[in-house]
Amino acid sequence: MRRAIVSVADKTGLVDFAAQLVEMGWEVISTGGTARFLKDGGVTVTEVQELTGFPEILGGRVKTLHPKIHGGILARRDSSSDMADLTAHHITPVDMVVCNLYPFVKTATRPSATLEEVIEEIDIGGPTLLRASAKNWNWVITVCNPARYNEIVRQIRLTGDVDKLTRRQLAVEVFNHTATYDGAIAAYLGDLWRSWPLDFPEELAFGYKKTFSLRYGENPHQKAAFYEPVMGSDIPSLAGRQLQGKELSYNNINDADCALRTVWDFPPPACVAVKHATPCGVATGSTPREAFERAFEADPVSIFGGVVAFNCPVDEETAEAMKKVFLEILMAPEFTPEALDILRSKKDLRVIPIAPNGFEGRAKAPQRYSLRSAMGGILLQELDTLSPGDEDWQVVSKRSPTDQEIRDLRFAMTVCKHVKSNAIVLAKDGATVGIGGGQPNRVDCVRIAVERAKEKARGSVMASDAFFPFPDSVIEAAKAGISAIVHPGGSIRDAESIAVADTHNIAMVVSGKRHFLH
Image (tube, rainbow, N blue to C red; front, side, top):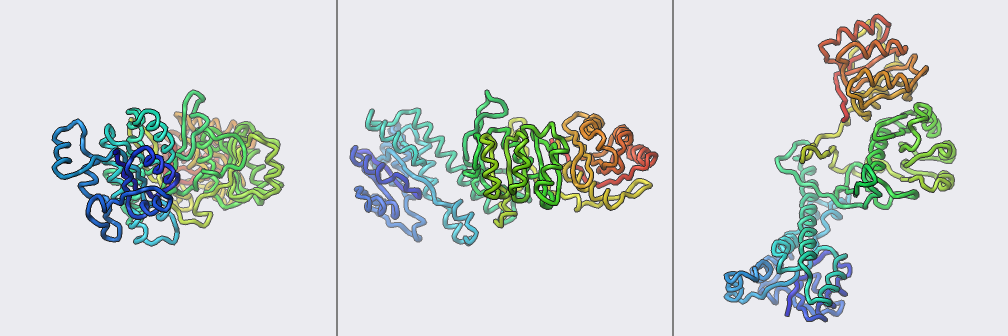
């Protein structure tokens, strides 16, 4: 008789699966809660303590950690020594392990959960069962996902066994499952005990779970999927949030991230339009409609096919104003019923109600980092959350900026954080008028920003994400009629840039902080 060890937290489909195993001549060995569940479902079960001769102890903390369980799982059937050990110690081989783990994430993300409750959801026996069976995949079928039950039953009924390809796939699923589980525990405790992310550990585990497949990657010939931290992040899960529109693509989500992080750097009402992962129009206003219209006016060409985000509710008037523009995604904390009625006429428009966790009244999750693959490894850093208001600005020109210029300089520098380097932002009265970035030299970015602003450049202010290595950028700003400039400072030629500013009566401020974004 073939033997299956069954111990699960998620009991979806379990009674039917176990009943079919018994029907096919398998013996089902199970632990406390799972055994009771199966018995209540009419399945014949042998309890683990009957097999081991040792009761569950420590309030259920120790159930399956016993040689008669793990010896049966780990024994190599083609090893005469292993099989002799089983015979000598009266251990029966185990042919299948069905196990999934305690709901650690569900408990840890519950606001009212105590540390003691969370610690009790750290599964010990479950990962051991799974890892042991996955290690011995050639002889033991290992199952952690209830969605696999039907395929396993089908193969056993058809051939009497599960083929090697499926066994290998199941083993990989198990190691991903246990690694993700441990990553969630490490993230939770690391944040709670402040060892992460404030300090960067020598070894780092991430727990991510697939949210959904994407239409495609950066290009249609590339496949892609979206994964989210199992412990959550500062942005809520996208699962089930989209109200209408086509499926999301890789580029959609990349642009949406830029739009959302940018707009929440401003007080509401504010609107941000993003195209190709960089802002093309950013504005505040007295109403969301005014904020949108000003963001649209900043670059009415680039916004076509872009992503728009608000940090305030979208009402009927705002939705009406957006009807004329083709957009890929529209995001806001919420949409009024009247706004949604208008937006439904744009069937392909993806409408997503979303705002960062902290602004929805939830506790902010620990993941406040940026993550990027590079050189076969991972680059990890803290997010750039520094606000221009946090910086010690210093006036270095003969003329000091006016109060309005200071407000616009802070606005422009805030936008700079989210524009690809070398970032140049022109702004006036709380709205961008020209943005240039992503070029290998700064002066070209100035020219691009001025070209996009056209006549609106005159009287605007300019922010640069890094210092001016040469005075040429300031010269271009002077030609365009820019009235004030902010940049981090620190170049060996700062004095030359200051001299040009003074010659043209431009107020210049150094912030002392760089905001590269590559």
